[in-house]
Length: 480
Image (cartoon, rainbow, N blue to C red; front, side):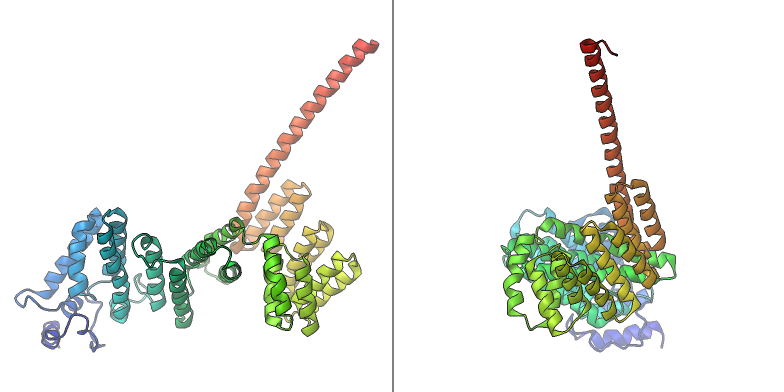
């Protein structure tokens, strides 16, 4: 059948249907990647004498023109006609329409008009969700613009977060948090692609805002969000290291390295890891869950991740967990307790037990990194270097992270050139730590410059003191 006949048949079929019902039984054989066909399918047909493809095509052209000139007011009227009459004409109705509405909301001073624009913005995402399969069908495989339901839900959360405050009286961080959670869950369930680093960063930002506004009520939730989001970013960066295509690997790094840095920096600035408050939070809960191995393991993870692995509540959680079922986490906790008690032999025994309880060399390598960190924190640098070498021996893929820790050891010892060299080795061994290695190298260079300046100042001071003493000796005893 020719295109013109297809369009005629579709016009006869769709004429009596309401705007948002006419696409429900769309023939899957129709080529929606063809602009003329898609415009004819999309157009309701209120002007039978007009060629639908020309009419809709003209509106789409005007939409692009207004968008390029940032003429949001004119674009709004144009967009309203298209979204009402031709919601599957082009995917740009949604991406550029959302940006247009964002700008209208931000520049409008009338709150009632802002509310209208916000309602349009939220409806835009609902409409895109309704016609998602037809919009995706109009985009050739491999081209930008395709989306999943989860992508649309998170984009809706993003825009609501940016535009809803002061406009929607029901705007709350809880509402936004739930929107992000729903979108991320949908992406995970749909498969096909991972949650992007930008989504992770934005959802964590809302978790932080919720924590700040909650007067400490959501501290534990925020702590868990920190650990979970950090883990996702780290896993994706691990995938980048396994990627054989350098371009694809760098794309993953660019997507997840900065969000990971943001998550870590925000968490540090949040104060949620305040030692006294964490101990106060977990002390009663560990006692309440002393028979719950999963909770005890989670508590130990949070506490150890926030420099509370020398607190009584951490030791208690480790003891309870080790008594239920020895795991490498609880063995590490028992090692920490032994170190606190001054029993170094028991400490090493438990550390080795932790390695033994691991099921794979990859995990053993990671445990060696944990042990090395513990030894670095207690200033046992020689032992730390031994376990860093063990980590690489168990799992060569950990060379980048191990070299980063070696850089930290050398920095602590004032061996700045060696520390910078280890940063370079870390970047060469593992692309996923290249960002962290560069940031550490810059901090080491600053420390080196400060140390050099201090050394010069001390040398100048010592020379001045020596000169003064020589003059005093001369005048008091005739010596020079």
